Length: 183
Image (cartoon, rainbow, N blue to C red; front, side):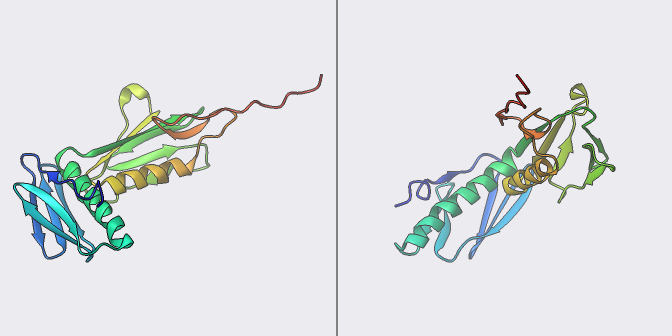
């Protein structure tokens, strides 16, 4: 049996889960998320926690069992605490700013890049003390926050010689030596 799939999901205070056939909706203080569970799984409430069971013992059902449990656990964590991803900008003239809900990026191109948040539950923040060198993406949907961070990083990925570009906060860039020159 799947070790991840068989673990029940404990519900924190102020989080409400509604199960209607294969549709699971989770509501909490930060917002509401909804997901359609795969037909090879059954989702039910037992003793104030969410339990996911699989229909049969096929290999595909086993993998969907753990995936469904992880997705619902991420929904519960998202509506109660939220998710955050931090990006760092390195390079002369590279900077970020937030105007309203829009993120404005100056990354050495001939024009600014404006990025709108995909929904009302996702927001950008650029702390003043970082002087436009840090971007914080916050939201309740882990997949949306991670994909948005990946899309922003893709605009100017870090290069290995000088380290210029956009990188994740916990990412380590392995630097290469430049040309050796004549001897």
